Length: 253
Image (cartoon, rainbow, N blue to C red; front, side, top):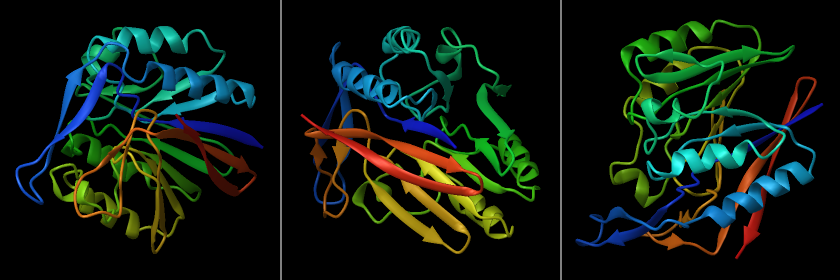
């Protein structure tokens, strides 16, 4: 049995606020606040280590450009193996200054794949809010396997019924990715962040888990975009033989 901690959207040094230009036309903006969400990150990492988890996947959106060094300096204080996918607030050029990994650098994107006895793990890079042709071709090649597939993506692939989905936050070409997954017979599990909310959705052979952010949450079942800074958390993925289970760990301020 192995356990993987998946944490995402730390947004270090970024304080979010909403500007309203009428219902359905809200915009999320950030102001730089040096210490924003740093305490949350410490709490999450301490909890991961206390639970004896050493394999960790970060789901993207470190925060401000200046916070990249701080993020990786903190990670190095812990005895964990980190894999990272990039979000829309990240850039390969900045992350690569502080983080050396076994990931493939493809057109300034960070992608990777590896396998164990039962699962194939695919790590996507959606930092450009899309999947380019090169990465899409690579992705389709990785789907040729008899094993169950786990995908880590910053953006959701399956649509989530929430206002943020319709305000320009959705991944471009997500339908292409979904259709590619529907063409195979494998069971596919997607772990994502980006929307700062808990959600579980399935469609045929695809099961998608959206994970709470480490920073702040966005309310899901509402008519307009509402920020909630009272809770934060991460996800534990437990893999035993051919079975996968997952649970959220939540903290309240």
